[in-house]
Image (cartoon, rainbow, N blue to C red; front, side, top):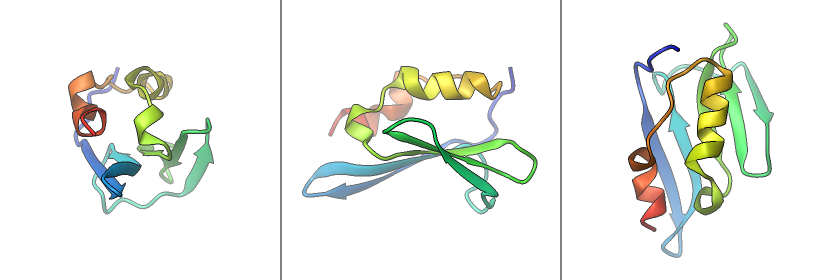
Amino acid sequence: MVERKHVDLEISYRDGRPRLGYLYLSDPSEKSEHSRRISPELVIDINKDGELIGIEMLDPENTTVEAINDVLTEYGLEAIRESDLKPILAA
């Protein structure tokens, strides 16, 4: 399992509710080569080397830690903790 070097969570709000979320798994300046919708709530971004660099949450309130960790595990990355999504869960 590869330890993540960088993780940031960005959330966009509308009317006080989380509207979109993005989990950065690399330097935010890294460009996506390919995006793929993997569920109604999640879109993943892959870099030119085939590495997962981010996960977009289209419905952050209904996105689970388990769903994100399934993706991270598939790409051999370290799982996140529920506390990593605390800003979304608190909304």
